[in-house]
Amino acid sequence: MFRFLTSGESHGQALLTILEGLPAGLEIDVDFVNTDLRRRQFGFGRGERMKIEQDQVEILAGVRHGKTLGSPISLLIRNKDWENWKEVLAVAAPVEAAGTGKSVTRPRPGHADLAGILKYGHQDVRNVLERASARETVARVAVGAFCKLFLRHFGVGIASHVASIGTISISEQAAEKSYDELLRGDGNSQLRCLDPVAEQKMIELIIRAKETGDSLGGVFEVVVAGLPPGLGSFIQWDKKLDGLLAQALLSIQAVKAVEIGDGVKAAASFGSQVHDEVFYDSQEGEFFRRTNRAGGLEGGMTNGQELRVRAYLKPISTLRRPLKSVDIGSKESSEAAYERSDVCVVPAAGVIGEAMVAIVLTGAFLEKFGGDSLRETERNFNGYMAQVKEFSRK
Image (cartoon, rainbow, N blue to C red; front, side):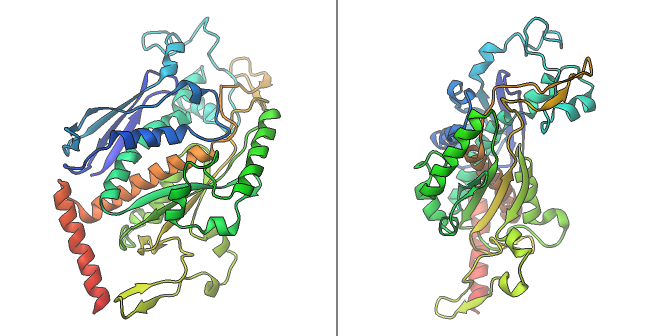
């Protein structure tokens, strides 16, 4: 079974991860993992925390001489900011962080704060917000990088880009760019946006939000190339790949909606305008489509086209100009608490989205092709692809 768990608080000592199920023999490029961690920290609109942290992965177990062993992989990413929070979050300290000035009693609207303290009975919102923070996603990005290395071995590549921030969206031409075009453009802009005109407007909007103490949401798209047809299943509801992808992306902090292909547009269109017609190339001996409105998924399975999935982020809930709240002790009306935060996280969220998509696809890949060793997985994969090719040419 392929699975992972993360542990750690936003300002705690470190983020910890145990990853289980990757086959033995996969070469691990630590620089590749650390590059993804840096990409997560990047983007115009990020806060002061990103100037403190320089995320680096430490592999504690499960890898020897640069290759996976098939046993659980343990990963550690230290928080440099822990030096400033040792007393507040010390394991042996009282729950009440008396005298530190860092206990929180005014929950933020839109955050896990109020629901969390009601659920667990905490008197200090910090007991909730530390784990609910998106800082946790640094561990997911590390896991996702391992999964990208696995998928890359089988010719699968993953990229993302910013499709909109606030009311500013990229052009239709930019939105239709392929995986290869996205890959070439990654890192060449402050917002990981492939439309320079729209990007400049986005930056101006972020500056305006920062000046007024506000925040901004937006949309990122993840594009995956090289997937074989048949990952996922139509057999049971919980095996459908589109459902698994939606759950994974919705688990990212601030993501409130997910779209696959032209899902939103399709809901307002006739069927004849939506579905991707199927053709056959007799010379190549393969089926093909001229459009990809389905986003590479049909019936809960990959169909061999590029996978395209979008996630919609609400503006983050920590505002420099706080909204109204209530003090949980006195029950008096008050302004919500403020924690050092970002103005816009959409570019970084795209990297997290890549990680979650990679994790889901790796799980589906291993469920389909299995194998305790990479060699065994290769054999199963190559046999299946030969079968698909033979079927298409009959």
